[in-house]
Each structure stands twice: as structure tokens, then as C-alpha cells.
Image 1 (cartoon, rainbow, N blue to C red):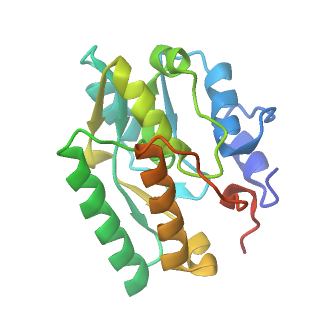
Image 2: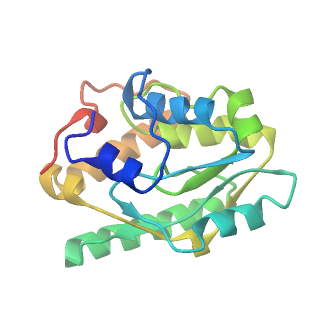
Length: 196
């Protein structure tokens, strides 16, 4: 459903492009996993910039057979003080909770052992926080590694349009509800919005 030539650019770069059949961003990722043939599948977004050795780092972490997922930090492409401060705080929080063996598998920066991903049922169709929810399920099948070497730069235009506090509080509420085993109650599905 891209309007910014993402599909055409991906095809020009040699990527295999599939047409999304399932609803939402989680559905799109599930479609990708079903189409993939490799033992490991990585996820990111079209507006992200991954490091040159990104896939090699993931493969290195997967040498341990117990590892079912690898995730890592992300931060803004935009250099405003608000974006830098927001992502600094988010990274501190995310790295802090890993000490308690709590993980999210950021949709912007994760890779999964395909067999474990399929066994746990893939992403649920949620308005947001699906990347946190899947981490709780896949963790039951093995180990999740948080590798800071996979740092991904991402666009914060969504935060700038919706508001940093509004979007981060929405994410945190969703994540807390998932942690407590509750449903996410919202009519807003940010993946369906149009951003300039």
C-alpha cells in the first residue's frame, strides 16, 4: 500500500516484493515470513537505515542454537534535540528491562529463527505493540539476544506529527497491557496513517 515508490525502489534494488494479504503491519511481516525460504528472517521498516554488517551480526548471534530471536537498539535519523533525547531515554529503558529478561523485538531491528517464529504463531494483529507481544511468546521457545551492534537509524516523522509524548505513552500503555496479559484498547492503528 505504499505511495512513495517503496515497492518500485525495492524491486530496482533486486528485492523480492510480495503483495500483502494479511491485515496490518504484523500481517505484512507474517506474509514475509511465510514467503521466506531462509532459516533466519530479519525485520525492519522502509524508512530505516541498517548498518552494513547487520545481517552478519544476526547470523553470528544465531550460531548459538538456543537463540530464537535477536534484537537491538534504534535511534533517529533526524537530529533534533527532542528526537535524540526521546530515543536516549527509550534505549536506557529497553536496555534496563533486558536485565530482568524482558524483551521487545523491535519491528525496526530484529531477526528471528524462522522455525521458532512459525511455531509461536507469528505476529498477532494488534494496533501496536505487536513486536513486544511476540517477544513474550517466542521467549518461551529459547533465548532472545539484545545486540547493540545492530543499531538501526529510523525516521521519527510519525512522532513529530503525532507528538513525542502522545506516541510514546501509547506504546508504553500497550506494552504494559501486554505485560499484564490485557488487551490493547484503542481505535487508533498508527501503521494505517499517512505521513508526510
